[in-house]
Length: 395
Image 1: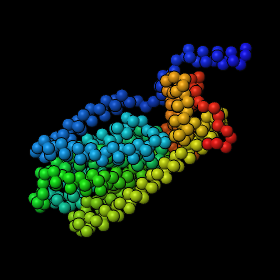
Image 2: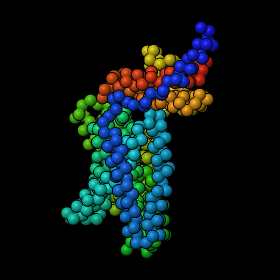
Image 3: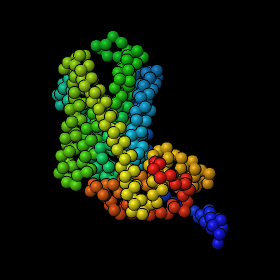
């Protein structure tokens, strides 16, 4: 059979095949339950946000509170999407984190704070210490549940920062609705109210400090990111406890600064925490760059083991090359694009899992899951339409 006839036979045979379903044989149970619970909780949260906003006492105040709470979210959520782009976690988990912060954490923290107030804690102590203790506990519970229930999707500090940050963004969004509504009504000690006061509050909370809550809870996220690399339960719990105390401390510094030092004290705390936030942001970017290095290194090792072809590696690492390969596949139809997209996603997952196994990081079912992912990649091979191999030395 000639080469030309062989190629035609291969294409005809491929076209007769059906793209295999995207089913994970080792998938974690409870996916559908999680999705349903997230949707139900999100609906409850939306109703709760409208209720909190309506305490402003007017349609204009309600609208303003909701709009101001939503304005910072696209930019903040984009930042976490960008950080999570190299090794993206399932959307359902990220949605669950945000919804937990906006609804469940508020539902836990608010009664705790009310209870502290009724137990005799004065307003200054409640603001400076009671609120940080209750709110960081409520947010941190999701991080704890992630460690227990969703252990295999967390690889390190960057994942911890993303999960804790999304929880904190949800909490901040719901809290801001209440603040903006209250500001619209006005305060006894401030001779302003209505849109003017709500706008002033928005400038402080929505523009100057939209990442305040993510910064506080980042200590818990960092602790979780370190804890997943430890096999000792004692060490894991100790790290989470330290992270919680650090989160409470950062939150208390922010809340307590104005109580203790007035406007000047708040300014000093703002400068200190802004510098800390900048350092945290730089650290997150560095960790993201290192993820790209890990991805390239692990895929290179996988290729040397013969599990994938070495010529595939460039089309699986850099975002520009990955996009080029999907564009190339588009000339063969949507099925080819879907196959390349799934192949890239599976390659990313298997690369980080392989790196964890090879470096001794504890990952539940690591080797079994590695082989399961490689099997799924193998089943996609008949449908792959990757660009020609790059010249030697070109990445």
